[in-house]
Image (tube, rainbow, N blue to C red; front, side, top):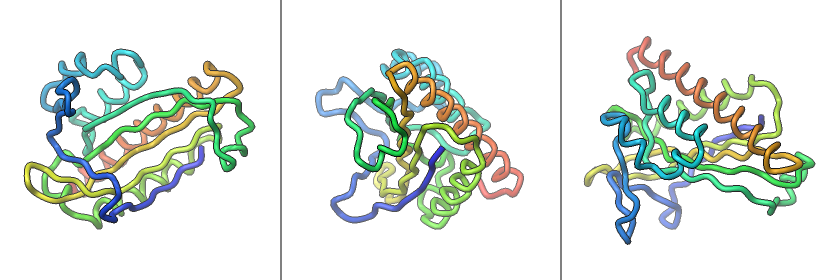
Length: 191
């Protein structure tokens, strides 16, 4: 799996507000850590069981992160750079993640360090046709400025089923890596 991290802090870059509600009110932030039963209201999790399992793991007490937003889609539009996978299509997703504890949310160096450790750990994973990126961005938590991660994932394949399988494997590897790093943060009292 190809994995990398980056930082997007320019004024025109995406930001996140927690809590959030869509303009039409049809979608909103659910605190899945405090109320796991609200996962039933996350349409993407209902449509994609694997994403639901990822969100359950990430929002558990064993994780130092929690989720804010997500989406999943399939595409046959591949960039020139994605040609290295020799694929016809991809399964894509993103999940916006933030630290469960308040203090780390405001600490850019902790975001940077977590992203570095996570990508280093994931580079040890078996090579599959998948690519992940963790992007550190600005966030607003009930009036306080801080940071969050956008986790983007793509699984590549000859057909949609093949791309979905690789996406599922990568999603599971990433959930396990996040839980592993969370356990080491708790052990070292960083979280």
